[in-house]
Amino acid sequence: MSWRGKRVLITGATGFIGQYLSRKLKALEAAVYGCTSPTEACDGIAPSDEYAPHLPAFDIRDARTTRAVLDDVRPDVVIHLAAVGVTNPGVDPIQALTVNAGGVINLLEAVKEKDVERVVLVGTSYEYGLSGRARKLDPINAYAASKVAAWAFGRMYWRACELPVVFVRPFQVYGPGQPRRTLIPAAIRAATSGENFPMTPGDQERDFIFAEDVAEGMIAAAERAGIEGESLDLGRGVGVTARRVVEMIWDLTDAGGKIQPGARPYRTGAPVHLVADADRTAELTGWRATTTLEEGLRTTIAQSRSKKRHSV
Image 1 (spheres, rainbow, N blue to C red):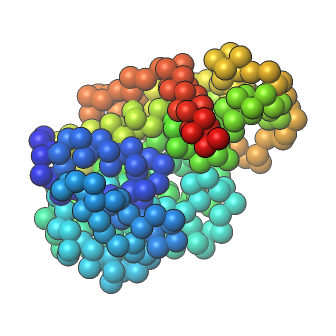
Image 2: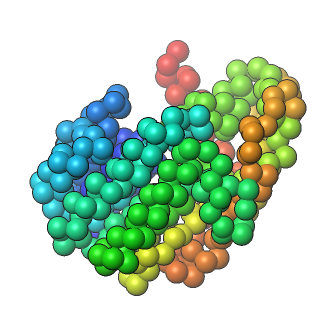
């Protein structure tokens, strides 16, 4: 599939993953239309070239506005990233359901009236909950539950309306620009500042995947023919404990502070083992993540240090 001139609508385009995806698609010469929530600090992607026209912020909960955006853009491909609760497990359940599931309904209702080649709906690995590799949906918080609901409605629109919907579930995404409250940027900040790092015991295994790879996985899900209705894991297929990741950061930075495992409790109901089925995704799309954890951490640390130097 050639992306040159393809009209791509990305909701949540200025979010952490959305920015990586937008840059990748612009490099492929797609016509990227970036949308964000009106509550976000940035109203959209700046029109840096002809492939990234600016769109006003809009509320995905508003069906009329959502339809108007689709009418205006007339996209070939839609990639839906906009969501609430991504870094907040305590998000209000009603808000999560209204935005994350209700927003998908509004989007797909608008897509029904258009000749769209592919809709990629972005979920979360936490939809699997405690089931780990079992591929059983078992959400443990309101955010994950709302994403399961969005998946169910997406499946319904695929079956009942034959919409070309594909679902992707990113695993533990990290990289430059990630929100500060998450594990890796918090550990890097402590390590490069010579501070101690209090954390949980850190035995929980996660599948850490670099944001550049996730963006490429989403593009593969958007362009691969014949996978409509499928749900794809975006991960490396390798489980690494949170404690080991922090130890790697300490080794890569020669940190002066101490790691303090067990200083904080685990979150209630947090999965112990959550690893992607990378082989199945590769079989369906031909895509695999290529960045090793050490390579991704080195890049993230280097950019964090560069940003710190420029801010002084």
